[in-house]
Image (cartoon, rainbow, N blue to C red):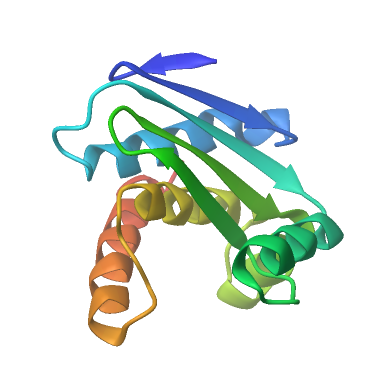
Length: 142
């Protein structure tokens, strides 16, 4: 675990080669949550089957998705992020990203969800993706 702005971050199942980059992505997203203090965020890279099961159980949607976020508390910010290994690899290729870049992009997305950003309505989605894309561009050239 790494202490960050009094928040603890942990990453499970991510390749060692990209750990420092996904940590930077989480740090960048946490910067968008001004005023948040403390907390703990855990991110796990899981199989398509596992994320499909989580999506079915908690969202009532029986399909594979790229990332799911579950906020456990708002203050201090605590939550879990699950990223699909298979889906993220496919999306990376389609987006012209490396897989490690795509993992960073999805960590940004997951943390922003924990910070109350949503992508369910067009206006809110536009705002969330504007923040996410800006943050991603700031450190993409790692």
